[in-house]
Amino acid sequence: MSDNQNTLSEFLLAFLKDKPQYSGLKEVIISIGEGTKNVNQQVQQGAIVDALGTTGDTNIQGEIVQKLDKLSSDTFVNVLSKTEKVAVIGCEEIERPVIAGTSENHSYIVLMDPLDGSSNIDVAVSIGSIFGIWKRNSLENVDEATLLRPGNEQVAAVYIVYGSSTVLVTAIDKSVQGFTLDSTTNIFMHTHKDIVIPQECPYYSTNEGNFEDLEPNTKEVVLSLRNSYSLRYVGSLVADFHRNLLKGGVFLYPGDVKRPEGRLRLMYEANPLGFVVEQAGGMATTGKERILDIIPEQLHQRTPLILGNTDVIKKIVATMNN
Ligand code: AHG
Ligand code: MN
Ligand code: MN
Image: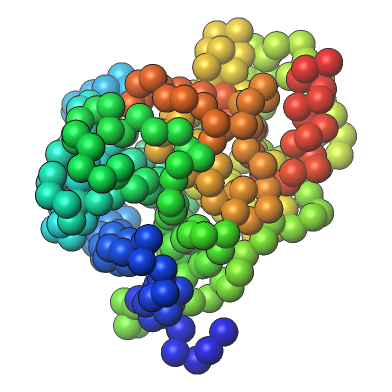
């Protein structure tokens, strides 16, 4: 690691300079960083800037829209569109794709969950933002179908945790890197180099309140996890995921008898974080198939999601399918 790679911009410049296939990706990720600074400011100020509570609207998910859901969605659509490198954006908060440009330079597709963990916004608990990035096939049409690409065709993924510190993590080309926002300079500094998920697995994360609704084999999985690991469940996927990525662990939001497809969304939660965890040496599955191999049918479709430590997840999959 040479000295001049100590900021997000410097890292991306150095890491991508000899990779023409990623032309324009630096600008896209930098724009996510800039949008994050704006969202972070609102998150940190919370009630002081009237950023808490709901807008009164309901989104395509049938969920009440929080003010920060809307603010973050607007912010990231704006900064991504201004790069003139993004052709189309799919967003949890927006029913239809946002067409940002169709020229040859608009060569990326971005799927995003602009504010993850909305139920935690008003109580000052860690929340996040999640981005999956695909390359547009040259000059293909730009419409909903453009967005529906399997996770295994992603070229990068980015997530942010607005926690005790604000950390942006990138996964590109088998390299997972973490950057912490320096609140004195408002610059992302390269603080977590070459992240690899640990072999040890101290934690499991799942909503134990759903236990009675689980299928019998899945109940067996949770009972086994209870006897082996400590439960850590924040209720913000990105916060639970980030802890498991750095310290080791597994996260489960499986299907159950009430919601066989689970709760989390394939295109902008499971795919991006599945990409990150695989690039860090982990695994992401529905319990039956690799997340990144799912052929999407709808922009907002849900999927069961089990991701984290490979060895433990292989045992989980075996139990779920015996
Ligand atoms: P979002 O706020 O983007 O809708 O995501 C919330 C998700 C995810 O962050 C978290 O893991 C899960 O909802 C928690 O669901 P439960 O409250 O059902 O446990
Ligand atoms: Mn979410
Ligand atoms: Mn969200």
